Length: 162
Image 1 (cartoon, one colour):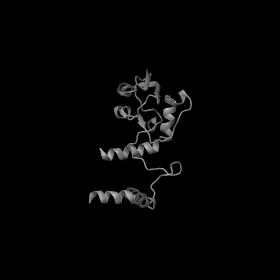
Image 2 (cartoon, one colour):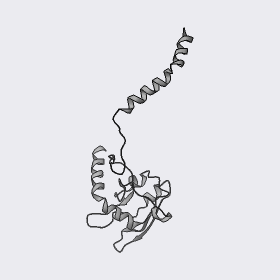
Image 3 (cartoon, rainbow, N blue to C red):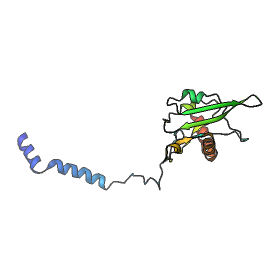
Image 4 (tube, rainbow, N blue to C red):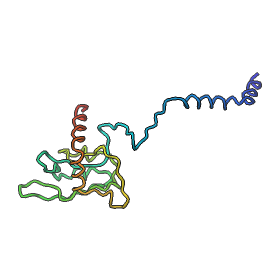
């Protein structure tokens, strides 16, 4: 009896009909494809994108030159040089991130005691030349100034969940 059933399944192309039924069921279903440049999916407030350096309300950069982010970076993508000011505080003279090396782990953001380095939601960036993804202190501060409002909102949302 099993041989006869297998013969009819083979003769009537049972597997093909079964596959076409599955295809037909999904052919008329609602499509969930996102048309990327025009439509964007929502990102979580903990998304780790492009780095930025933050400033205090008076315009002074937050970084105190403790070099914790440089020490904790597993990819060795951060390079910092510091100098002492007249009032005895330390500030960075050089703060560079090589995004070719960076693995976007977020350790630099977590280790910063003053919340100076953050990772924004910005992920639409690219580099044509080798130097394009080497971000200097001025470039990072400009990114922080540009996205400060969104960064502050994300910090408040993150504080609610901790």
